[in-house]
Length: 320
Figure 1: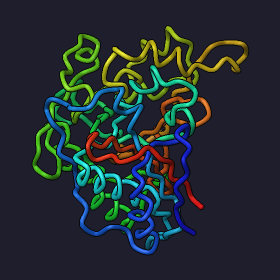
Figure 2: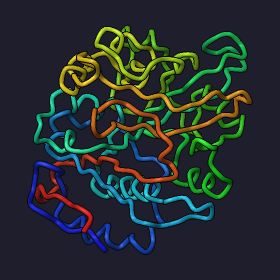
Figure 3: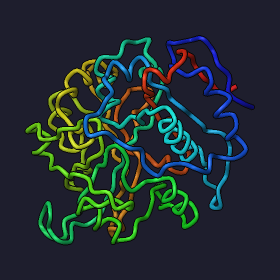
Figure 4: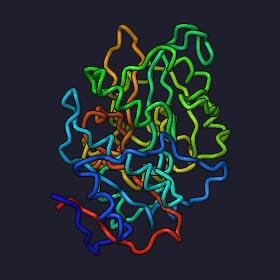
């Protein structure tokens, strides 16, 4: 069982040397992997670059960890980070994928299947009242890489994920995140939803966080346009209002009691103990809605956009 290259540009865009590269990790995932990619403050990639050169590396082969987790998500993240470093590229965040889907046509690879975003959703308590009243349960949506690094995910596999398949953080990890401090010591900018609405996020596809209230999870999962565009959790996940309207129009589904809707999935159940938790974010395959799932114990399909000079040919890689 390995990967094959096919000349079908409708499904994916790939470097013709990538198949040999990723086939080598079927028996062993790459060891020397950066925990985070270097994200430029003047993000050097456009939406057109994503559509034309994005590569969706999916590795859902059957590698089991100590707690019987499928390591597809971890291997996909590791390989995406390593390949992005080698190609001077970037692993696409959720705002970047949403921007791409706002203009992608039906033959583009972004519309062909689901994709994992290099974004994450972390739940915990705002003990110091930095963003809401002290003791408020909040969600910190981090784009471009945050707490869920390969090493931290491996540790979570060893310690055991939550019942929902999420990473269980220590309190100090979440408290540092609310200060904008990542495990590497890097500091990131944290924004409120109002900041996003007012266009204060400068590097839309870079690394930053948006903080919203946990109560926003107690909402339905299918939205008509007005409700979708005004939903605070949707806005935090999108990182900007700039592409949301066109994204809705381009992916909307009319099969829900005759209404045009976009799905927007929540995945945190009632968390009475309020243990800090972390989850990846996805663009769902069938309806192209946004989802925070339990796939940390399953598979992943991250998207890498390489620098133009590093991409030799547009090809497709599939499992064979």
